[in-house]
Amino acid sequence: MSESAKTFDAIIVGARVAGSAAAILLARDGRRVLLVDKDSFPSDRLSTHIVLGGGTKVLERMGVLETLERLGGVRFSKMRSIGPDFDYSGALARDGADDRGLCLGRVLMDAAMIDAARSFEGVTFRERLRLTDLIIEDGAVMGIRGEDASGVHEFHAPLTIGADGMRSSVAQIASERIDAFQRTDVPCARAYYYAYFDGVARKNLGDEVVTEFESAPGAGNLVCRCENGLTVAATAFDAGEMKTFRTDLVSNLRRYLNRSFEVGKMLEGATMVGKVFSSGLLNNTYRDPVTDGALLLGDAGLHVDPLFGQGHSMALMSASIVGELAPQWFSTIGGKSIWSAMLAEFTKRRDAELMPYYRASVRASQELGLDQGARFAHRAASREQWAADEMIRFAQMITPRAAFPSFRFARLMAAASRAA
Image (tube, rainbow, N blue to C red; front, side, top):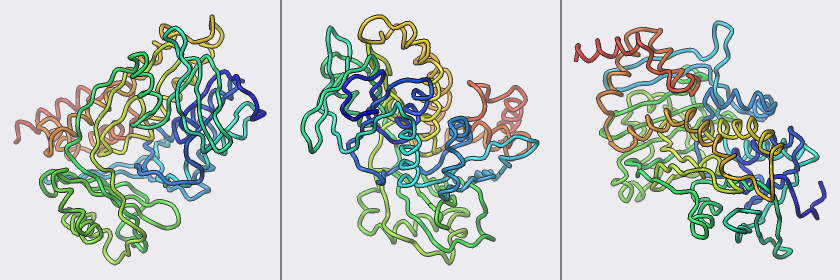
């Protein structure tokens, strides 16, 4: 579509995973989409690298999963969870089902997703365009104003989507001007740091994602292979320790990883490559995601503690909901905006599908130690392979809508409680 066009069916602010996914799905339905981002691409972003099984299923339906694999994305075929009194694992591809996740850095992933969106004739992509304001009439969002090197631009659409991250400008402007997108924040008790390692031996780590909990008070660790033969390793710890940790990032990251149960051993003989990355202090954030003429996707609407690596998958799964609902929105539109009453089904569907995972993460995020229920669940998963498989399917965001725990898993948890 010509870059001179000023009117679209949808404007998406934020072109990374959530935004580009929404652009692809809307363009497939024949919609004219403007996709904008303040950054240029390819470019990096501090982020989880993990797409869980629930997210890879969306990527597959979108037709981009094979591309991400060709770029070096590692499909991890096993998940293992380790703690002071549990250690269990499960295969993610068996019995004809492929629930494997994906590990790929943001530079390659975001650029590939944008390329996929731009391949549709109906998608116009503008990078280095900074959102300066929303066009609002009678309390409804009608479009955006943005600025780039060529000047100030105004674009109109009946639907504006904020996919611009946890510090969303769309959400901030709408909140200030029309009191939209009410939010609830729950601080994360942990801080997160990660780095890349080269030369991790296959005998130490296969194509798997490994998570650890409580090797030290409040500690968590994650390791997984990613692109270019590298391995990404992350550590989590009491956010109150950040000031001390920052005095020597490289040495302290190594030290924290080495105090783990197994992750430090997996990295033996490997070389740290590049710098150490930090998440800073974070919140779990729930926003009411719709208002007249606009909705929020991904971290803009639902940002969760990275402890379980759910961010990408939540973004993709919420974009998939938009793709399913949008045909009805556009077929029944009356006026210049899609009203919040029509968009309300998105909130209902998003919360039904994603809030069970969000609530579980918030419970783990608020306290440095695993709560009693989580500990009993992990212990139950360690007792029987079927229980490990059920726990892992929930962790991979594959279990549908709050179907975890099953009745027999709950009974096994009760048995673990009595044994304790």
